[in-house]
Amino acid sequence: MSPEMLNPPGPLQAARLAAALGEGSMKPSMLCVVLAALTAAVGSSLRAETPSATVKHAVHPVLIGKGDCELGRLIVKSPPGADATMEGLTLSLAGTSDLTDLDSLRIYDSGSKESLSTRTLFGAPARPDATVQFTGRRKLQSGDNVFWIACRLRDGAGLGRRVQAECTEVRTSAGAFAPAVEGNRTGHRIGAALRQAGQDGVHTYRIPALATTNRGTLLCVYDVRRKSSRDLQGDVDVGLSRSTDGGRTWEPMRIVLDMGEYRSEEHTSELQSPCNLVCRLLLEKKK
Image (cartoon, rainbow, N blue to C red):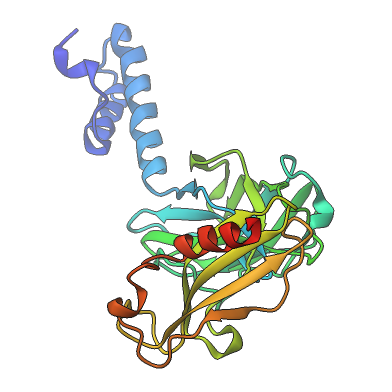
């Protein structure tokens, strides 16, 4: 056997081999090689026109009070020349601690952009169940098509429990298949969004510090950056939030250091970080 026959030929070469076989000029001993070559060529051609998909999971919590929380990013890759439509997908929530923590699940279509966009839904929001089906129609463009798997949590969701959503099937007009999976597969811990941009008219909250007193009270302090997200100098105060039930509920924010409209480095020589303030508060409690 010649070395050239060890590698599958291209479609044109396969066609010539088939023609030779049809004319009776092919030796019987070469029949198996030709059939294998034809199968490889046709299979390669079909695979080149079939979409593929990958789900990417990042390591981060899902937060009560945040709204849409990312559970995974589904990237459906459509090869050039393919004429395929995204028709649906299946999620398994088998790894979720308690389905009652979830309010709903959603799939967002962000086109080819890698960043989460909640502007366009794919299908309708779904109620949590062990298996969740989403159905829709979206023409796949050549290259990457990005869909975000997201959830919304109930206000009473259990802190420390987990939400896990596995995409088990992607359905397109070219066929259904299981996506590849990258990254975290242990689910996402449930937490609480204590402060968010825009709350109480504040532009940005940054640099949080958290401590527990001897009585079990949680103290959280943070920068209150009123007009922008920039570092000093600026209108930056220090806020305090307090919880007496392990973080399930929090008292309204208090401003514990009001530095005026222009807080500079000179004003905070001993408080370069709110972490230092937590330590000072705890020391004062012990006196």
